[in-house]
Length: 428
Ligand SMILES: [Zn+2]
Image 1 (cartoon, helix red, strand yellow):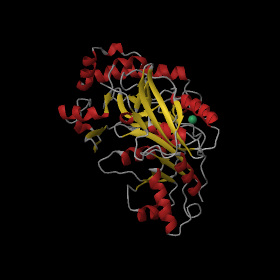
Image 2 (image 1 turned 90 degrees about the horizontal axis):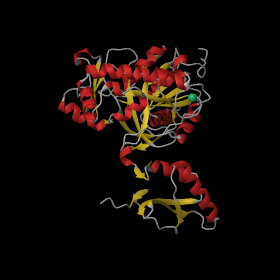
Image 3 (image 1 turned 135 degrees about the vertical axis):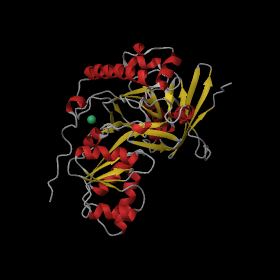
Image 4 (image 1 turned 30 degrees about the vertical axis):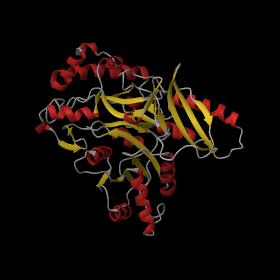
């Protein structure tokens, strides 16, 4: 039997991953200047972006200077590609020089250039515990979308054997996992759980009969209950990575389960999507990325995802900032006194209080500005309301960076089907 590898020490690229924060910033600023010069010289789409903003490449010296450029939202790639097919003027090479071309929902064409480590997931897989000699089942689509290929190639780089299992057909997935002694799984957490259910229905013991040791989960959010269920049922470690079809790797978890480290080879900003201004640690905003990619120039590309960053040290030794979690989508968030809030944040907050049966948030415009009120129905009417109120108000301030009022209302007052956060402000 193969000796189990050491999965959770070391780094894929120690120098990059543990670079002191000041040095990292210098390194990123240096690369930013180089890439801006290059793509401005080779990409008509980027030249137009600079022209419209009234600036030149010399105006972008540091990450902070990126605020001078507008955000290119994912949706605008559709119109850019229509206007200037096939890649909206963002490709710096002829498209018959590419390695692959994909078509993703939008519809948006996505290029993959002929260069090694194009999607940059190697560090993420190493951090999740994948090692040379692993047999890995990749259960993402290889059809039109870049998912399957994007996650397969870094595994070859690490020395893993890949089974391009794709999506669907649980019988085949279970057969592959069982009979080929698969040690690593790549795909959606819900799909791994479905494979587990199906295997058990065939009399397979997930811990004894399977060889699975490690998993890399992506596309859908890995919630903590899902993570616990996967780790417990399969007896493995579950770690997730975050990226998009256009960009590739953006962030990934380490063994500490302390949030997702931002990748070293791109710039990640957390930005107010309305003003384009960069936000500080803990403030919720849009994840905006700038690639060090010479072939396809995504400069200040808006993912539409909401998150926040934490730059406190991580025990794993990696020094990049972390995105603790994705909060939601920009188009589903509400802005109150300059701060974005999303129902997933309020749900997470309120789920910590078993005494709360139901709640509803109302944003209203008062004389002194916007007011946020949590209307709360209690499970048990006899608890100490004043105490709970104080607790809740502190927790709201901590979690949302906003003051919120709390009012208790009788059980049954909140109608079914109401939006969690109701915006009653008059916008006329
Ligand atoms: Zn870490």
